[in-house]
Every structure is written in C-alpha cells, then in structure tokens.
Image (cartoon, rainbow, N blue to C red):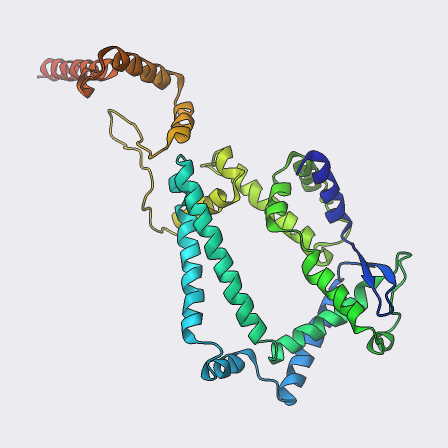
Length: 360
C-alpha cells in the first residue's frame, strides 16, 4: 500500500461503520450502514445464541461432537482426517519456526515460505470441509441465529435511522436474501486481511496516530468494548509492534517488515521465555579469543552479513580478500589478522609469566 492508501484505510477503520450496498429481491439496490455492536447488543446476541442452541437440541439437532462422531461412522469423515489436521498444524508451526534459519539464504527462505503457504492452504481446505459437514449441528444453527439478530440491530439507513425499527418488523421481513448479503458483508467480506492490518500497524502514517492516542488516551470514538473487529485487531497489532520495537534483542528491519520471519522470531522468543529448546540458535562464545559467527548464506545473504560487521571487521575482510587475490591460496594461520592474534596471545602469555615471576 502507498501512503495515500494507508491514510484511506486508517480513516475507514477509525470510522468503524461498514458501508454496504445490497440488492433486494425486486432487483433494486439499497445502501446501508452497519455500526459496530454495542456491549448491550453483543450481550443480547450471546443470549440469542444460547437460547437457540438449547432450542436446536430440543428439536433434534445434534451438538457438534455427536454429529462429528456420526459422520465418522457413516464414513463421511474420519479420525485420519482429524489427525491430518493436527499434523498440518504442527507442520506449520515447525516450518514457521525454522524460517529464521534461512534469513541470509534467499533461495532456501523462499522454498520454506512456499512450503508454509501450501501447508496453510491444505489446513484451510480441510477445516472448510469439516465446517461444511457440521452445518446441521446445534451450534451452527445457533450461530446463524446470532448473526441474523445482530444484523437486525446494527443495520442503519444512510440518515442514521434503523432499517428495521422493531424486532417484530425484522422477524416478519421476507427478503431473506438481503439479510444474507448483510451477514456476509459484516462477518466476512468487511474483515481486513491480517497482512494489511500488520502492514498498517507498523507504518509511519498509523504510528503517528497511535503514539498520540497513547498520550491522550483517545484512539477511536467508542470504548474498547464497542470497537469493531478491524479496530481491535489494529490496536492489538500496534501493541505487538510496540513490544517488538522495545525488545532487548530487537530484531532487524528485515525481520520486522516480514510477517513470516517475525512470526518465526515470536516463536523463538516464546521458547526463551518458557525455557524451551534453543536448537539451531547461533551462540556467541563467552571465552576470550576469536569471536566469529558462522552463518549459512547465499550470495545476497553474504552481502547482508558483510554489512552487519563493524568497520574494523570489514577492514580485516578486505585485507584477507586482497591477500587471497594476490597469492591464490593461503593457510588460515598465515592470514594477517591470524598472525596479529597469535602475536597478541604470545605477548599476553609473556606478561602473565613475568607477573608470576615478580610475585615469587
């Protein structure tokens, strides 16, 4: 997104309302606004869900767990599919964790990223299949009723008046297609992708709003309990990036601006906090002497690593390269910096020996 697109998205999220144009059963178009549910409306919707779930059980709709068991017995679903879902979820976690190992190897990183996308697609496909098979459950029925109730409460005309003035008017409304369009718009298509939310949360345009809001305690017009889903997610990711920027071991910009790599960093930071495994971690030796890190990298990654060295280390690298170009091959111990290091170690030993003699 360019700067102008980000500003438009900020305005859209900050407003909170969702503008929708839907078609009636007669074929005409109607423009409506859907406001974020108030705490009262959310509570009422939760009550509708519970009431309808109990009612569905009375009329014979099975709960999800029983329906799933029946589908397995009818061989329309299987325990093997359940195990595949769990396995794919574990694979996704493993792949995502390992991405940081390829930070300086673009080819391997893109291969791992492609594998991650395929695993995510496979997981979504299986979850969607299971979800569609459970549409006759008591929970699915209750969720539909809950969504329809909320639409009846939050739909407004452009002048701010309720589209349905009373619950009875909504219950007697015959155009179910229009209601379905509103449900789809509010609960699905209006949701901004997380990748866009994250990009916006770390953008300069939004960070200015965010920093001022933290000082004034004034972000959106409504209290947190009445924020829209997009507002909550933007605020959530803003706090996440706050923690990243203030981290003691703050990741590089290459990691911060790459969602996959930052997710990998989150996993490893979580392992550190929980005392988890430190496998594949690049450890710096605490003992004196040479203190290099050896990192697997491709040509582009090597350039990034070179830039990470301090000026002194870069000078040493250039001196080594010139010597290699001149002689073609040379032993490690004959390198200038290796010679200097060995001389320094010899001098340290001599000083220590003299000091020991003087104390006898």
